[in-house]
Image (cartoon, rainbow, N blue to C red):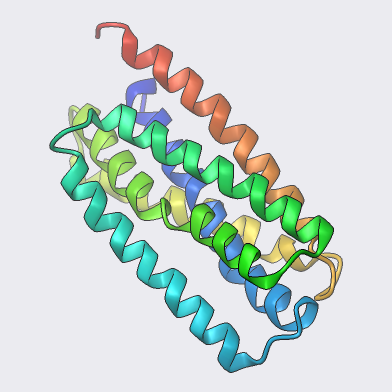
Length: 189
């Protein structure tokens, strides 16, 4: 816990779970209330995006043999940033549902990759108390996600602005964390 080489990947992992948890909380209202889809249509979209989480996890497991973990985690975070931008533009302009669904895929699919890589990088830097380190990593992701989730509905079910503000703020924090993480991992221990 005393080293930024542990804390930064933990925070990156935690912030990516803010993206996941707020998507889980906001998407039923966005899709059903704002876009007028049925519960069944929402379920199909939600399941499809869930499948992309599995694909991303498997792809990460494959790519980590060829790409440095830090670079891969940064790349996946940048994909999420693109997702934030696309989802924000689509929601503000109330563009087509299919563009929103693509935006959600770009935003959400990398979560499992960032989570896996963040956990692995942080645990590699944990020199003692691995059980405590592991539990702290789990706590942070659910703590951050749990705190942010109820905030998406603060303006009501028909207003996506709180969700947009949260994902933009999360994206900015992720960029700052990734820049700092890159600097910390460039230096020797």
